[in-house]
Image: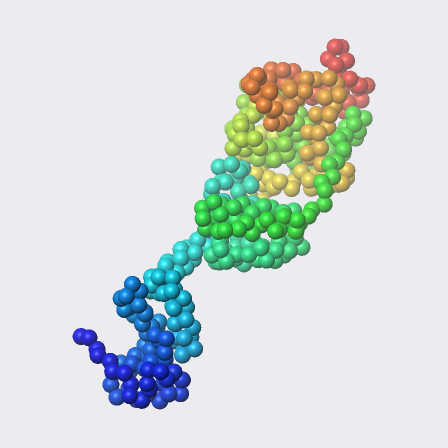
Length: 416
């Protein structure tokens, strides 16, 4: 049923409303419409409801915009809403249509929070990262970033928000702050290309976090290698740790590749260790030839950890591989803290073998380094047999050094 409203006889059309007069209104007088001027009025219903309405014309047709109830919107707020509606009407826009569009935009922005984009970014990169990298990024975001800004719509997140987060992380772990900055930048750029943000909030942060330059430890010289192996033999760590370090020497693999190695990757009959693509830095499978010294070492190790999945199982939970800090701690225990690192074994082997004149491309293949475009185009082989010969000579060379042989040149040893 349509409710007819009469214009109040108490307030003329040209008299503005004021809060005291509204509070003193007698609802029992029946439905009435009190004008505040410029199209704004307060409609009073018999039920006691008091509703703000704005009347306007577009294309000669009268329309009514429902601003809201007096119980929720004050006289001042109603006038502000009326003024905003008038600006829209001058542009030929219906205020109700604009409000609906604003609400849809707000709903859409709330659905596209920083956290939702962050998780989308994580999953889109998962296939390009190692499992460890994915877990690291996910843990960093969940612990240090999302609690602060995860619930905010992407367009409401600012560079200042990112700056506060990076400062907090930097106090604890500067290198993790660098990774956090990279992650925030990746998330922001994903939001931009999917039209959920307009600016890269990480760009102003590009020089905020600075880490000390990496200082690569020098490789060991041949006359220093026997001392290292003597320290390793005297080290009181458990055998799998010492075996992992020796396997680094015999293969020149990365420490991470040794610590995460599974028994199923080793073929004793063909003396090879094949690492699947998902575990390799370059995301391609790689085969390491195993010299006889490595085979003997693995056979001994198999008697200790052969019943587990990993060569070097975690001592707290054998179902997992050893922690990535295991070898660093061992080097500390051996007295090489700040002097030599597990990764330095690769550098040492590559340096000595290179100095002895072994082919550069074969050595780079052994280290599973990214080949140049030229090499990839004309040489698709993995040079396994050539590498097998070199690595056996390398292992023999190490044995000779450690047993006091006066071995100066690998080629001289090979010739003899």
